[in-house]
Length: 408
Image 1 (spheres, one colour):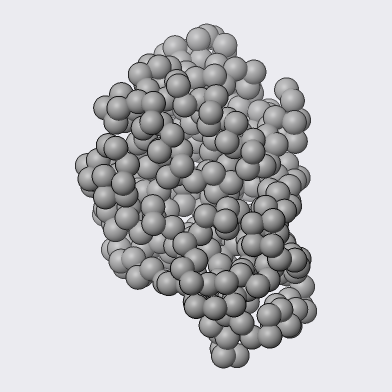
Image 2 (spheres, helix red, strand yellow):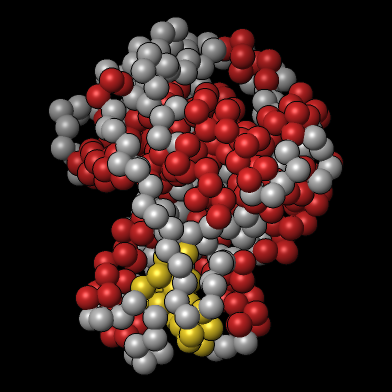
């Protein structure tokens, strides 16, 4: 397998090249072939765009526009729905951020030994190092650690085996994914694991079946044996929190402003800045320090931020300053940039970056400095439809795409 730095160059130009390569296959070909996990050496049946979309080196809107330029919505609906699943998860979690914060607390408690299972540490180590004896699971564990990526179908199988066959806490599986996936984000990762375990949709769990794995891996692992035959919901899903609603989108300031760039959205040249005149760009580094990310993920984020900083310097024709967000001097360093000019940054979604950066920005606001969070039109249009199940949003896809100006 190629090392991640070679397999996943973390640049905007690489994202655009992958989209151009994939777009002709995004219609019926994708619909027929998308569920096959052919192994790390053959990903031609999927877009491999998720690490770039997650960090917004390329946007959902750009991807969908390119696809609809080559295919009808009917022919490309399976792919567009996959793009919208990520949007749905983010919109759902934005309305229930306490789900993420509680998951973090539960994960930390498990890792600290706050449980009654004396075998957990040993069983967890076997799972994460691919030493369970279940050939497909062990191969996927190794692939994830080595490459930072898994096919979506393999992620579902893996999570189901983790929960129902290995009987490990789902929170630790989500943490394992979050640490290693190049495309990992709080919403898609956490809520997908909850869905497999029956916590997300009442009465709905996902059971990994040997025949399904054999069919959709084309027999790479034979027919797995010893898998769980039942997948009961972990808890009563009727206790899900109610949606709090989406906060109104903010406008950018008028006049000179400082643009603050994080790893949450690395395409600032396409932000809707209104009348803001970007006088300085600050790159906040270290925004992932509490997430225990793997070296592969850290390297991807670092390279992507460097690429974003270079593009921002050219686009806005300004100098770029780097600040370590974890430094005790971060607040003062940020305050010293721009002589009190308003700050504009992306509308960071619930997750590690927001948890670290938002207190820093709140401190700037308390000192009298204006802070504007720029939300993308795509999110503003779709998130209100993410208060319930995906079907609610799915039904609105054609209407929302037309409202956004796409030929749907």
